[in-house]
Length: 602
Image 1 (spheres, rainbow, N blue to C red):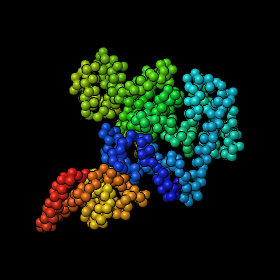
Image 2: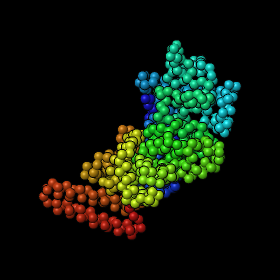
Image 3: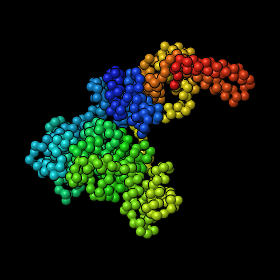
Image 4: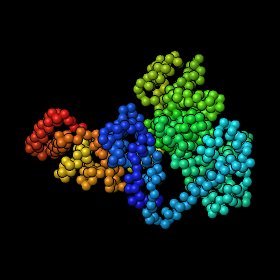
């Protein structure tokens, strides 16, 4: 994989407007001279615990412990690796990137992949011209018009048409310098079983480009125009650049609207999503069928924390909802269901009742569990015991997704009232039936695993080392006092973990710019520096407050030393106790002084 020069990385970092970047995901409000706060984009919360330090260009959430800089923010929100993050930021802030020297084989592989993507982009533009300029595509234009899709919207989605000839794309691409192997590897050509010759994969079809979240075409879906022709849709094959399991149609167009709305509407088909965007529902994407994958769910989670499923109410759609809810269980995603009539998709609803009705239905989306319970009751036979058993069986399939608490109690009462059964019996039967339900699928590992590891480590530190983190935060907030204090620290004795010692060592030489020169292979330290830099912006930076934190650190050291001496049974601890007593007295005096001054630490 090609690497970018350190100079390129620094120029991107310098160009980033941290407020602009983070504001695309959450609303920020100023909370100090160099601090902005807002609701955390990484977990659901009602009270803001997320903050950024725009000068240092770092963020930290005191709720879920997510921390990092501009690069990790993009890695977490966009689901890309570091290379993808730097490329996205470079595109956004118009910074030219320079590559380091790379291995010849890696360079060749990168250039090959870039050529395949260029070929797909070129072919996509060709298909668009064919749709609007060729006589052969008249039937395709008529079909799209009957679906109520306007030219402006179709052009935005780059919808095109593949002509009927067997070699149009093949010959045009060859003339442009592309080899047969590249046409094959990009999925644009397929091979005849009889002659062994290759020919165009897509012919006489409406073409829907399948792009990634950055808008780069990875493949195509072709729709045949004859309703009696099978298969109705033909997709690009799995290959070097196209992976159907990861694909979310229109994710590139829905990304910003979904972030702003805090939700993403999920449909099944291409024309459903195009019609919804045309009607003003700009946060809609398609999963291309009903088989939601873990990779698609990970992509949806990066778009917004609330998923509104606008899937058909038939059995396939119901199964898709169950699978989605299971996959989402451990991702802190809120799953809601848009109420649709069985057999009617969003595009049908738009043609029948218009955009206002669709927007109203989306606004009336209900939590998945509640929707499923009510649907099971409404469609069940409640006239006899067998019918009620059937209802309980259907609810039992999803019951393990209901966390114990108020919601579970309310649902038990609802089911009890409608089925005329005792609440205890309903609760007992649902628990029993849920044991035989399919297990909840484990979600795929999220991107930026290193940062997640750092977040978990930082969470543990929150329980063990609040005093040490607070002291280091004050050192950043008051560098004129923090610098000498850091130099005086006895790292092994004053700080209780290797991470906190590494943090102190880093701050000794980078106190006025904590995010500078961080080692690339120490994500824990990077996360800690981000947290401390954000924490420092919210502290009461007075000499008394600083002195109090320094004394808190000394008191914590004394407590550890006394505890260790007792465990070791090393004899008289009176001298250690005397030192602790002196620290406590000084701490009490400084606390009184701080109260008299009207300042308070932490």
